[in-house]
Image (tube, rainbow, N blue to C red; front, side):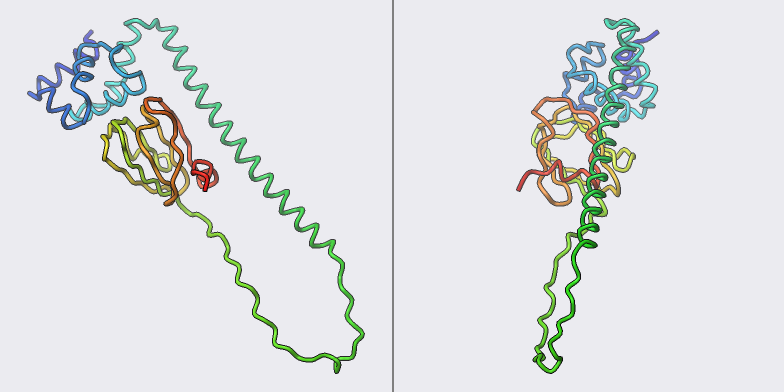
Length: 248
């Protein structure tokens, strides 16, 4: 059975496409593409980054991405990693996803509970305020004065959507989901940019957390991590997006 690299190389040569053409079109380092075709996965920058490279390569050739990723998994299982260790690593990734989701839900529940408690205290305080009795001074003793207009209170507008604006400063593989729909899955170069709007949530995966800056609803956000660090499943919602902003 052909390995992943052999299969990709065969499909590319059948189409008469030079490897350099794919590198220029996908912005992937030519050395990484050669390593991929030779099944030298230890040279590639991490399993998560490797999946992004495989998706871009397969997409350019017009191949089915899921089929190629399955072949990549089979190549790993037949190579250095035993089947038991591969299953264990996948289990750890899925377990990590569940922990992150549980933490997000718990944080949201604490926030809503705090809001309800504050609202209840304000209602109780308002009901406990004593009623000032009417003055016994005759009405004729009062001098009519024009009441000043009530002060204008500016209420904070409620956010109804999330607008993400990314500016890339280094070569970065990035994947962005808006409301569960994949909007970006590629490698960006320094100087590139990307914008997307979501109604409820954003999810970001990246192989270089310090390779870009971004804003949320026009406000500057904090870096997701250090340059070269892989960050998975960063969930941004209408309820928690202010936690990602830089302090004013």
